[in-house]
Amino acid sequence: MPDNIAIPITGQSPDHAFVPHRHPLHGVSPSRSVRSLYIHIPFCFHKCHYCDFYSIVDSRDRQNAFTDRLIAELAELAPFAGPLETVFVGGGTPTLLVPACWDRLIRAIDGFFDLSPIRRGRGEWTVECNPETAEPDLLVLLADAGVNRISIGAQSFQPRLLKVLERWHQPSSVAIAVERARRAGIERISLDLIFAICTQTLEELESDLDEALALEPSHMSCYALTYEPNTPLTRRVRMGQVSPVEESLEVAMYERVIERLAERGLDRYEVSNFARQGHECAHNLVYWRQEPWLCAGPSASGHVAGWRWKDIPHLGRYLASGDGLPPAIDVEEPDSARALGERLMTGLRLREGVPWCEVEDAARTIAPDLSAHLARVREKWIDQGCLQRAGDRVVPTPSGFLFADAIARDLLAVLC
Ligand code: SF4
View 1 (tube, rainbow, N blue to C red):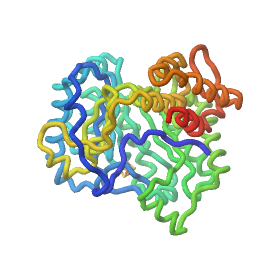
View 2: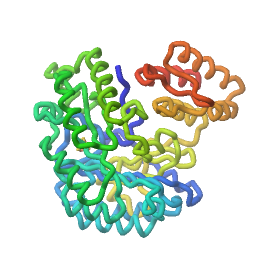
View 3: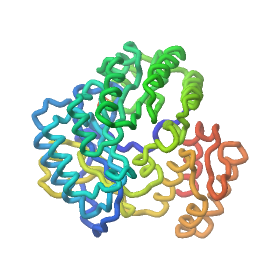
View 4: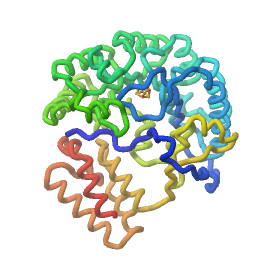
């Protein structure tokens, strides 16, 4: 069965499930070196039934307070940042933030951070967009600020399947959003599609691919539907109201996605991500290559100097946390074995794979015989036709993309 995204960048935690910690950057010397920034806007106009990202239904009453708090957090992060090469504003629904708040946020980002790589066309600034909230004025504001990439959540073009997902947008709004983004001057368009939706047929998938490809996106993210704990959709499955599609159909759908997208020049560069050459998502590559990034906003995850954390995933507590760095949860100290495991886990989901000399160097610092154990696992998967050598790199074969999670599990078992 096709793997789904390996690292949850944001996630929803019930109130009682987290114990806040001091933000780890309090203990890190500012180095003006981090090149990537993720910002989480936690508002949606409705909660989709499959979604476990942290977001709340917006009544616009806290947008101003949230923007104030977010700007205060960005001010604290600025000393850690070098010239930014990637900015990604996700959510939630960033395009639900009213233009006045966006205007203040843009001025703050521009004032605190060096955006020269983005301004010179060498960097990427993405904003996630719900098709129903792609207002022309907002898109012009974003484009003028330097936003050069929009990621639009299409998910499906079938009203019936959008209803299964409880996703509130009209299929026709996707084309309108794409057209408005292009008219505003934002050329890099990514579309998100979900497949293997309960009761979906292969014909419906073909139709979704037809509709998406007709819009000529330069990037697509295509994920098989996953049933996250504590979502309404998962509860409906448990109650027998809906059933996941058969695994064989899911695999057939995934293979069809790969074929159809490749025919249009959108090649798979990560298990679930496809792009024209040069249009890969530079920000997500930072995650998958385990490079450092800063984060701001409730539930946003960061990775700096080997530390990992998540900003407190609760808007009320985020707003009440003063004006410095907010409390954090899921704080993990630097750990060489964990870092190597993460590098292998996400790197082998990429077409570019991982440079094995990097793996060997890291393994030597952990245990004398670790490199040999990892090489043994690598050889096993090469023998099975799931990994291959490409110069110094080890990369997944086409069947290796299907078994990315199993390969990662095998390698991680050696590291435990
Ligand atoms: S719009 Fe996106 S973030 Fe908001 S509930 Fe739906 S899937 Fe989740």
